[in-house]
Length: 85
Image 1 (cartoon, one colour):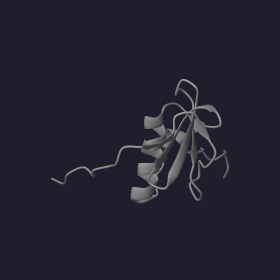
Image 2 (cartoon, one colour; image 1 turned 30 degrees about the vertical axis):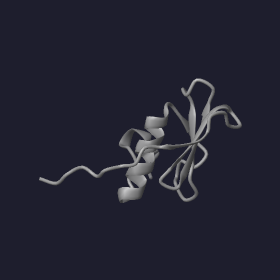
Image 3 (cartoon, one colour; image 1 turned 45 degrees about the horizontal axis):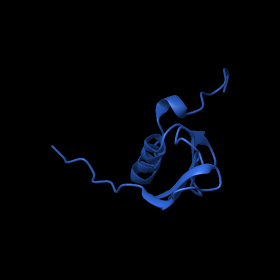
């Protein structure tokens, strides 16, 4: 049985960033949140979701972890091919 990877906590960079909420740094990514921390953006060059917004910080850190640790994306967030492709 292997142990789960120990992942760092997001580092608070600014309590109030350009969107009115906190800004975090996490494993090379920047996470910008709106006031209230309910909408956060992933800013990470090379990540397929660079610039996209999601829910809380925890959602974004999971996307970063999956990408760094295996170039993976959650199945429910992957685009489905169109019929006939």
